Image (cartoon, rainbow, N blue to C red):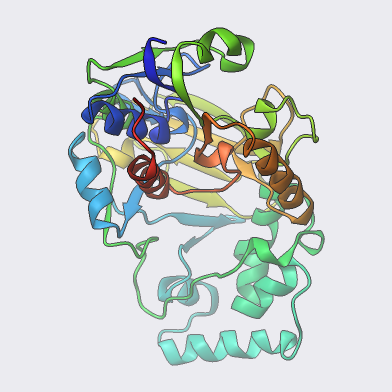
Length: 370
């Protein structure tokens, strides 16, 4: 055995675990089936602009230790996420705040806005929501639901909101202030040199070997033979060759183009919340870092059903998929030298800071490999 750890996946979890292992004097082989590191956070330079190839990634956290950790590997800017929503040409601020309410109803005070929302919530008074539509109306009322939630959610999930479970929307934050900052976290920003550079810095220790275009499932026996323990961040159902059936995911298709304009939409992220557009949002990448270039790069995001061969982005954590995942967990318990982690290994949607936190915690709890 050449390595202490074989880490499957060079995303934020794999890079963080590898960095921690190397700092403790262990060796790690990090592999990824893609041709690049950094997983879905991967950024690449196009026309002098850092482009987020797999959708917008804005780092935000209230975890002091995680914030201190990432700053060891990258300098972060002061980007504040303030997305807009476009509904049939009318623009609204997100998250729902006084700017949103003023554009929707013309109200100017929190009391007026609260009165509007309270009256519209009344249609669900005394009822237990049984689907996403009822849950959303119970939270924010009918106008916000029909303008900014309904059709966007239907595009995102590929189903009518009345056919989607209520748990998908556990909360829809309402702010009765004129504050467009999407996140409530204490820290927020984007690496000035991009996420790829951040992950490269994590993997720079000479105790870490990185192999790209390396498919674990296609060459499992030879790869496992090289390490004492496996850290697997791929899909847990794929690891077991879909023995119990495939878990449900939603995927995304990205359409990126370079335009001969200095500025296309004036904002990093604009959501399109009606069915009039087949995509859910347009990202204009240069606004993440405020770079000045004669061109701009935009990406349209199109949600789609997942099938083998596509990248799984969002787990569909309904009752059936949760039960199937628990069955896969039972199989995983009989793999003593394999730890399943990350979004796909744990079949769990994590923000970037949560991915890093779980990797740090998992390393701290892992018995040293001798």
